[in-house]
Image (cartoon, rainbow, N blue to C red; front, side, top):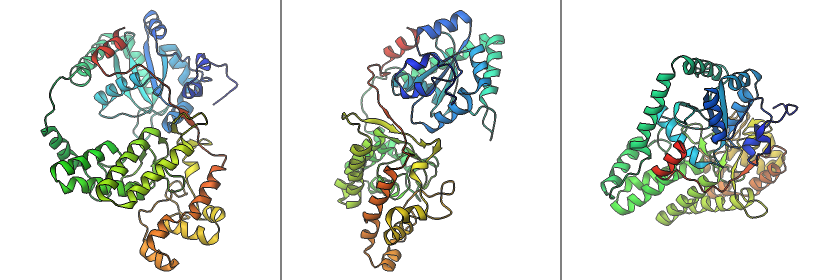
Length: 435
């Protein structure tokens, strides 16, 4: 990002995410009546981007598009550009994530939406590169086409916006009065059983999210209905995640999701709420099975959060960035030589062999430590150690953790902002959308 540019109106904000865009040539506005009054006065579409400070794809879109003069010229000429930090405005994030999922069948960040001047969305998506690539539409193409459509087919655009809000208001966002029916639990279980990955654990394919609330549900369902398969699905998933690279075996804690179905390579960003819910799920599994691996995994989360996700005044950080020094995952990957340099020859060799750290690597030529393919019995015999002791040996890990903590590539963290606004009712959504 060019820092010699004149700062825009975001430079007075406190949000780390907004400040990352404070020198963009885009004429960013905050969410509010000033922005939409301008859209009405100038007869322009509102371009809304929602992201947060530790999001890798948000960083990429900022560098590729929002710091780009050509993109900025088009946005400033034909749109009113609005930037929102989802950690400041979870109400807006909740609403427009529902819009995106309803319109496209998926969601993610950065959220990208086009709205009429009266706040009705008619286009939604997530990350877009500047130019079309790998089958993904480019932002320049989308903005150019939508600017023309707003000018020439405004009636159709307004109809689409009205239809979107009508569809959302009825089945998704309005109050849904009713009584609890135990059959709903069976329906949820049946759906999870159909989606279950019998090889790796988890549900569905890549990218694969931990979804700890689903695992807690399965364990509760197993107890309530004496259904061993429900417990098996939860345990297999928890064990697979604990072995995988989504679990940080050096510094502990879990990444937001796995980029593959095997839990091998994570999206390196770590979220506070994911780790809180995962700690609960692992403790529930320990209570259910009395297996020490679940307790150990929870204890590692409890060690990670005070050390890495708590500031000096006791507040919690919301997330750790996936990027450091402008590279995704730089802080978390290793080579065998780096392990040996940090831990010493003997402990280092044991560690990199147990945790599958290789010269070829599994992420852009480097390795995310994991236990997915570890043959602990064979390696234990080779090193004359008990298998459990080999996997949990702390000396090499602690040395690597200390070395990593000294690294200049430590990722940034963001504070979660307090926010009273919620999107918990139809009344609130009506107020938000229509003033």
